[in-house]
Every structure is written in structure tokens, then in C-alpha cells.
Length: 263
Image (cartoon, rainbow, N blue to C red; front, side, top):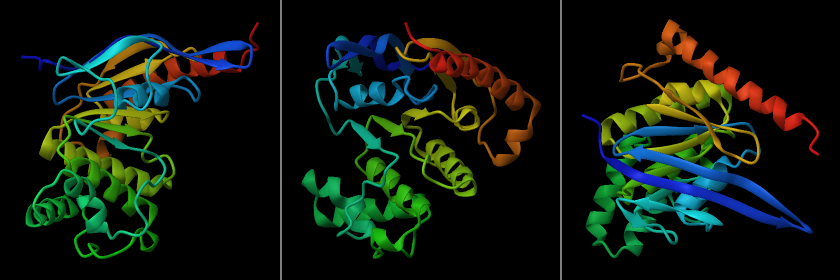
């Protein structure tokens, strides 16, 4: 049986004023993300993927449309949504453990409970032994592990990830993809992930939503019926390569449109 709808994006558009011109970043986006689903928004650069994710996070208000989570309208940021950005948004003056505890402290949990939860997520992301390290002492991949752990420690209803591996080298990125699939297998959080990397989208997702060039609309939905748990060997499987080629073709069409002169 299909899971119920967790996150509902209904007719969402976003316009910006650029001098005398009105620019439409996204236009009439409709999405239904199911409970416990790993869904990815894939599209060419500048198509409005991050804009859409920031609207879901409550960091931007839509010009039209609405977003609901568990049937409740999203009107601003909230603890029911955890957000991980491409840039390393850790507090440099806090240790790994204290970064992960930050939201728990704000929520007023007893110190012992904060420490227990933080230690659990340190272990989940493979950073045992680095609890007292500071961000400047960590590699890029390790910093993103901390950011993911911090977001998950607050037990959000939905985890939002905005190209979180975009600044990493290829090998570290592949390892982080495997880590994220393992964390998802363990916790089964609803995840909405944004990327422009086709292979990443197919490897991680239950469904991939391909966006058009600006103004961003939903061009296609690709179901990914690949077995879980997933490992890097899957990337050479025939079904994986077929899905990747399908997505590449859709993205290529939009990337070409994005380079064409506008009237």
C-alpha cells in the first residue's frame, strides 16, 4: 500500500522583480511527496530547484500557491523541517558534538538527553572519535556528516537537502551518497533532495522529479524501482543505466533551452 502524502506542494510560483522586469523563478509547481519517501528534484542550473526547497523550508514565501506538511500550511521555518545546505553551515566555535546538540539545547531538552541523542547521531554518520573536534579540523565530507546529523537529531518530519554534496570531490561524494542511503534505511525519514547530478538523483531516490529550465516547472516524474539497500555496484546495473540515460536526455533538453537566446 502506498504511504500517505506527507508534503504537498500546490501550484507554487515565485516571482522576483529585477529592475523593471518581473522574473519568474518557478511556475505552478505541484508535487505530492509520500511519507518515508526519498524524493529528488533534478534540473539544470538556474531552474529554481533551490528556490522551491527554500519555500518548503519556510525561508521564502511563494508568490502563488501553498505548501502543507501533514496537512498544516507552512508559513515560516519550523523544527518539523531539517535543512542541509551545500555550504558548510556549522558553528566554527562549537565542537562536533556541540554542533549536533545545538537544536536540542534550544528545544530545552535536559543536558543528559542532549548528549545521548548527539552521541547516537555521531555514531550514525561515522564520526565516533571526533566528538570534540572543531569544524576547522574536519574535511568537507566530515563537515557535511555533522550537518546531516545535526538536522536529524532534532527529529524533523521532513529532511530537506540542497545539493549537500556539490562541493565535495567525486570519491567523497560517492561515499556520502552511500552514507545517506544507509541513514535513510535506518530512520526512514521523508527526504526531499535537490541536485543537478543525474547519477546521484537516480542512486538515492524512490522518485525523481525533473524540472524545466526557468521558469521551473515539473517536466517529468521518474520512478526508480531499484532494490534497497543500495551500494555503488548498483551504478553499473542495466536498470540503473537505463534510468540514468532517461534522466540525462530530459536534462539535456532543458540545458539546451537554457542556453538559447530569449525574446
